[in-house]
Structures are given as C-alpha cells and as structure tokens.
Image (cartoon, rainbow, N blue to C red; front, top):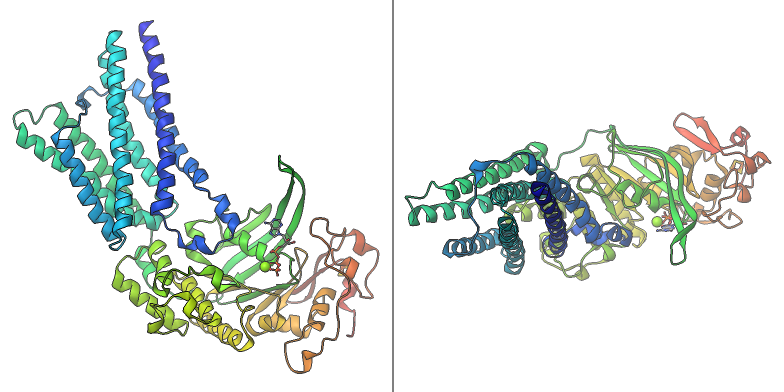
Length: 592
Ligand SMILES: Nc1ncnc2c1ncn2[C@@H]1O[C@H](COP(=O)(O)OP(=O)(O)OP(=O)(O)O)[C@@H](O)[C@H]1O
Ligand code: SF4
Ligand SMILES: [Mg+2]
C-alpha cells in the first residue's frame, strides 16, 4: 500500500517536473529565436509567414517531443533500475565553480568564432546556455532534496536514489534528442552546431574528472567518478551520433560549388492546385466563405525552362508562388519538385532549392546591412559556410555574375539604383545554388531599359546553370522576351497553355485573344490598343457558375452551356491547350 502511494507521489512529481521542463523549453526556444537565430530569408517573406511560424508555435512543436520522451523515460525508469549508475548528490563547490568558469570562457570563445567576433551575440548565447544548464542542475538538486525529505520520512530511501539516476540519465538523453530534433529541420545548422556539442559536452566533464582525481586520488573510482564517466560517455555518444548523422545526410561538399543542373529534366510539377483563403468574420473568426484564389491549376517546369504565368491583377499568380514555397496552405493538389512532394510548410529544403525574387527590391533588402552581408547571409545560414575568405570570394563571384563590381560589396542598399538593387536580390537568390527561381514581377518597378538588362541577365544565368524559372507578370512584352512556355490565368484557373510561339501567334482562348489584343508594349506597330475587354473581373469569392469567363465572353461560340458546365481541356495542337466548354471555339475567328 505504502509502495503504491509512493509510486503515485512519484508519478505526480515527475509530471510536474515534466511540465516545468516543457515551460523552460518554451522560454529557451523563444530566447534562441530572438538572440541566436537570424533567419535572413524571413526578412523578405510576407507577414503571413511570420504569423504562421510564431516562436510560441515553434516552441511547442520543438518541446512536445521532449515532453513525451521525458514521460516515456519516467515510465521506463519505474521498470528498470541500474544500481551501478549511482550518482552523488550534486552540490556547488569549488569544482563546480571552476567548471562554470571554464564553460563560460570556452563557450564564449566558441561562440565568438561562430559569430565572427561579434562579442555581444557570443555572450548572450553563452549566458542563455549557461543559465539553462545550471538552472536544470539546481532544479535537479532541489528535486532530489525534496524527494529525500518526502521519501526518507516514509522509509523509502533506495528508490529515491534509483529514480534520481534514471531521471538524470533520461535528462541527458532527452536533452540530446531535443538538440537533435531542434536542428533536424535545418541540417546545415546541425553541422555547425555539431562542432560545439562535442567540446561543450566533453571538456567541462574532463576538467571536473581531473580535479576530482587530483583532490581525492584514493576515492577516485567511487560512485561519483563512475557515474560521471558514464554520463560523459553518454554525452560523447550522443554528440558523435548527431555529428555522424548530420554529415551523412548532407551532401555538404557538393553544396559548396555552383553545380549546373541537367537541362530538360522534370523540375516542378503542380497538379490541380487549389488555394482558398478563408473569409473570417466577427470576434470568433467564423468562416463565412472563401476566396478561391487558385482553383485547380496544373503546370510543369523543366530545368533550363522559363514558364511565364500571365493574367490580370488578382487572378492568383502570387498565391501559386506562395503555395509552392509552402507559405500559404493549399486546400488541394500536389506540388512535386523532381518527382518528390514538397513539404507543406516553408522549410530548409525549400529554402535551398527554391528562391523567390519579388517586385520591390527595397522591401527585400535590409537597409542596415552591407551588400556583402546581405549576399553572404544565405551562404552562412543555409550553406553553412563560415570562413570569411571563402564567403568574400563567393560573394564577389555572385556580384560578378549579376554585373556588379567589387567596390559595391561594402556599400549599403540605399547607395544603389533600383536596377542595381534588383541585381543584389538576384545575387542573393543565386547564392545557394537553387534549382527553381520564382520571379514575381521582378522588373515591373524598373524602367524599360533596365528591365531589358535584368531580363537578359536572367536569361544568361539560366543558360549557364539551367535554373527553372517561374516568371510571374502581367506584362506581355516581358513574358514574350523571357518565357519558353506560357500559362494564361483567369480568376484562379489556367485558361490556356502553350509555347511562347503558340500563344503569341495562335492565341485561342477568348481571354488570351483579348489580353493580346489589349497589349500596348510589344512593338511599335502594336502600340495601338485594338481591343478592350468589357466588364469587370468577377469576385473570386463567388465566381460565376460554369466558365468563370462567361460574363465577359464575346465569341460566337458562347452559348448556354458556358453558364452551366465546367470548362474542360481542349487540345489546340501538341503542347497547346485551352480550357473551354465548346470545341467550336477553336474555329472561332474573332478579328480585333
Ligand atoms: N491573405 C489573403 N487572404 C484573403 N484573400 C487573399 C489573400 N491574399 C490574396 N488574396 C486574394 O486572392 C486573390 C489572388 O491574389 P494574388 O495576390 O495571388 O493575385 P495576383 O495574380 O498575384 O495579383 P497581382 O497581379 O495584383 O499581384 C485576390 O483576389 C486577392 O484579393
Ligand atoms: S466556355 Fe464559353 S464563356 Fe468560357 S471561354 Fe469558352 S466560350 Fe467563352
Ligand atoms: Mg501578385
């Protein structure tokens, strides 16, 4: 009866401890996010992304496995007890003070190197680490003392000790797991941190053992020393395991050089993608409808190919880009990169393989950072390159690629023209040797001559490295200049797809025809706008039934079916398709 009661009390105490450990973890990850992580790519992401990855959510994701593993550890500790792992009571004496001091000096040195002599960052990081480490140790001591009082008073002493060992060992193991889990999403980070885990795990322990041996050589091989050795072995094993695994899973060396891709391989496949933004109302945020921003879009891009996505404002072009990057949730469909599904959320894998260039370079560049730091940031954070000379050489090479010069390296963004700023953004996008680059109206803020320079630059880069480009624009002359194939979008759907030649010389869908007829910039002769499509684009909240273009369709083929039936794919010629209910539309000769 007494034993059952003690188990119950133990259980309660452990659960409380687990909850506290969980809360400490949340504080830790929040501090980690604020002071240590410096995710560059985040600065040019839309605000929705920041909300989705709030530190609290991340903390919970990170700490939940810790919590669960911890509880598992406790349950296990009730079944197995290892008497030979007996540990001494932890107390703060001269040895511990020396360890704390050694840890601070060593840790500061390591972090200084990691942050390239940024003393402030190094000190903040080491204080956080130290505080957590000693917080846990103090807590452990208090925990043991409370246990001793409670259980000695009811005559159970041995069990307290046994459970204490199990607790301590599981704590080390769980901390290792947590560290591993935390960096799992970003394997390059894992490599960098593996360098620290090993010395931080071993050196203080070795110092502590040496001091113990010097002070009490006779009693050295008592339980305390033995248990310290065991915990050291555990730390080393975990650190080595993490290091080995991270090196095995990352083609680290391969990432260091820019490797051209094979041309004409399947790169991106978007299959029946649907993104509906919920429309929320009231305090309770009740969903009252949805904006069907993207409603069943399919296309693919090969390496070395540019797929141009054109369509009026609000037709869902940017939403497609955000869905590929995992920055908005898709409601339906598949997005595959090299035949593998992309993770549904923005991740390190996406960061490495897909880059995005937005319309406004000012919004993408941190005005307080020099160009060298802006371009070096993804090299540091994603590629894991920390050597200053290598970074400088790589940045210089990237600047040359976008026709900027060595002297531009140490300037701030405000010292550049719009076109030059966009070149910096492109250089940064190229830094990690991506496979797909999404360009969302990258030239629309620039004047025509600079536009042409940037477009030519992109084309040259593509020729060398065979990047796939998803080029989003509403400007037909731009898409004519750069795209190999074109998808024409209307109200969340692709209505026509084909090669550039097919679309420009034989536009077939009524909307494409109208779009081309209303263009004004392709050449001198075309400057005259010969046709303006009447009517407004319907709301994507309640698109018209049947073909969503039906309220504006002007062709002879228009009939009642258009209001009822969903358009289907019709082949115009090989590789050239439209979506319409009526095959007659192919014969339609509407002359503008
Ligand atoms: N976060 C959001 N919540 C609700 N609706 C949104 C959200 N973002 C975009 N939309 C709506 O989704 C539709 C598609 O927007 P999107 O930005 O993809 O259009 P776009 O084709 O890129 O337009 P533009 O050419 O003007 O950039 C629009 O009707 C827009 O109002
Ligand atoms: S389905 Fe009807 S309304 Fe839609 S494009 Fe074809 S003809 Fe026009
Ligand atoms: Mg857009």
